[in-house]
Length: 385
Image (tube, rainbow, N blue to C red; front, side):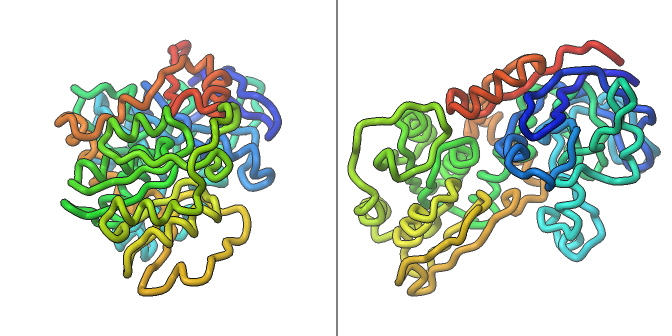
């Protein structure tokens, strides 16, 4: 089977949309999906900064959604014609998978970050026969088709716009899952979200849907305007205090982060019960801890690339900090919840999306890096089958 896909051949090169070959269809427990749309996530782009960690050449993409066109065996639980959202891969039999925590699967790194299941490597090549890493995050969905384990495919209502649903499998899942699962936010709770990108804005929407008082912290008024539209109290920090996508212009100075925890405590009647950091900024992580009330919980979703020095007193009075992976989600449970909220007008994730033809993947990456778009979604234009 030949079809188009975006191939990344080196950590420095641009994506090249070219013909690839799948020499074998889905095996037992797998499905073949025609991709209708795939979100571009920061994790896809971070491959360029992880030389040696993720094998190349590869087809990336891990926020895919589409239609099942073939199943491998009778035990997938899915049928040809089903509309599905694709999420991360997991083994299904380790202690964490059996404990409904697949994001902490013992094999998570091998199955997702290192290219996928080794037994399927030889069947995925470029047109010249060169081997490609088989399944990035269990998908490799920057392509017209993807072979995935049925475990990481979630059936959705065919009336939904499937081409827009892919980001529910990772980025939006992470932000919303942190609110619903990791924190268990409910009516009247208070939460501060640091960073109003795709994950942070998904958290804002989820917190609003849960009935919480939400404060959104960012340096750019465009992102804060979105957060306010979704129900948050916007709180802008000085331009030097919050990392942001390169390419956005600097803004005039605004009040310094020195009083940021005080401002959040005033807005949340003595301190937030929960805080979510999406920035990986050590300064803001300390601010987030200081903004919490006693026994408050700070969740981190971004990977830290350096030591995290905590300022004295930040963990006093029962405050705690944890890392949250994939929103502590069971995708088969959370994704239907999010689509239901969207149908009810309470999780308007589509307002964050801009679509691009798969052929324009490099433009989408530039716009994402420059902060011109919150969530690019790549839509393949079929050329093969």
